[in-house]
Image (cartoon, rainbow, N blue to C red; front, top):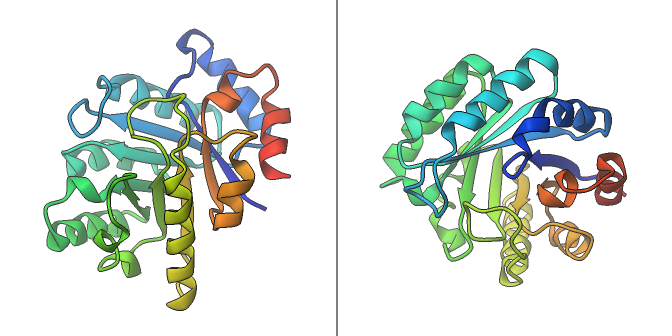
Length: 220
């Protein structure tokens, strides 16, 4: 069964606390915190509200935090979230200059017992991550352009998931494949069949009237 990481990117702030509770009752597996600095990707910076959400969740829930850093200054943002003891933090391959910088970030995460994720944009070739893939716990394949919720999945990204899944099998690597963007009843089965085992889902869940029904549809 796949796991669901519910994105809070387009959550209604006024009802956020109630939504956190309802999402936990509905059996989401992770709370997905999308941190945008307004530089690496499109979209305005939301760092303040995402940090508030993460802190609120830690006070009322034991569910793990899945932090997705869409930022240029990776280290300082990691340091902001270390005290919240997230399950995993994912950074973008597009935000690092070279392998050495990526390994420094990986070392920082490992030292703080945080699982390591590497994210890759739709237009970025998978070859960019292969030289560090042995050091990570998860690869996040963006199935839309990062930075904005509610987009339609880019069809070509399904093939990227398939290629990555085959690479992991051939190299005997047990690494999670997470997909993010445009996941709904029309695309769920495609990304599952391609090999994704963690689905980041936002508006399909958070803009619905029944979180539990939507999460059950994704997991079934």
